[in-house]
Image (cartoon, rainbow, N blue to C red; front, side, top):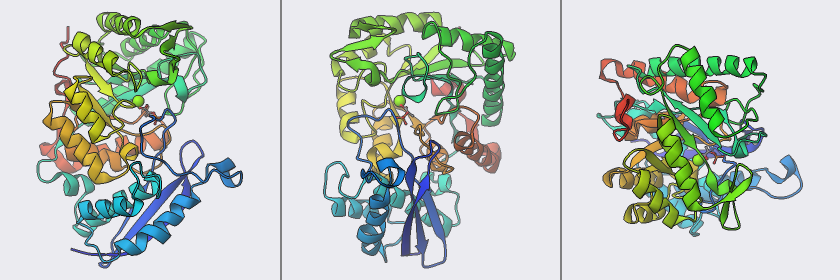
Length: 427
Ligand SMILES: C=C(OP(=O)(O)O)C(=O)O
Ligand SMILES: [Mg+2]
């Protein structure tokens, strides 16, 4: 196996026009792996630390020159000569150099950039596609694309509290057809909004971002679009939401639709929504500190719908372990930059799957053309991926990579479809 010969990093731009880290790892057999690091807006308080320069200079203080120089000055020399396939040793070495509990010394953006670029170089060197290198011979499950077609919360300038309204085309026979289904509904939704005189401007993840009379009315608009596109809601397409409730949790209450609500009121609201609409999955229904509320919600609704921890778990095996022990959810959102290295991400997925929790591979609201998460979703057999609307290059790059993977797998490919949500009973 080839060894690491050179590591370089640079500052590039993400989909929001903010700087982020890109890393290239070169091996002694001439292969190169390149990875770019994503960035969140509704970040969890317990995420690994993304290093930003913070001075008043370049990019209004959002520059990542410190993280870039940490890669080149503090990490690169230490990793030269390592076999690129020794991913776990390499990641552990970076954690040692960092020495902190939250990657604040080197920056999770510096560490993750190197970690992913090493994996990509190793895959190149082994002459394997990344999903195959990471997932082995049984990597064959194409995820359901959880397409966020209506944006609110921190990702839009509208009055909609819920951050993401997603469609899941579970009835399609293949990923390719699922993507087509989603794109057709996306275009139908644009027509529905136009007809009603609502804004068709876009949020950070490419979904429409109109102001609406209520959060539930987003679901009505999507239902109308599904019908207009010629699909059946509940069988062809089901619905999902990311509430991102930490964002509107203030002074012990959820400030939702204009007034403070208790945990119990929020759970009752979700119970009603799940009765009215074919919702299969709700992410971050409650705040990242409301552990008791999460357990109550899972006890009440967990047999019917998927309850996904994002800010609650931050892809951190320790927090996921607590969630398993306290039955605080039944699924984990997986974001590589929340934990900050590939092997820790794999550990998080492994823990979740071994404990009967599902996983949903996820982008961040700030993305690049990097498509690593598409390969990762297939490699670990998540069965679900969320990477925004089926529009805008930063989002469709991942969906397009899944098309390529499905094509490459040929008849060995299996689309997760309704099997991704075994708890959900279609009408
Ligand atoms: C993708 C998300 O948003 P962000 O990247 O802003 O945390 C999310 O909350 O799931
Ligand atoms: Mg989320």
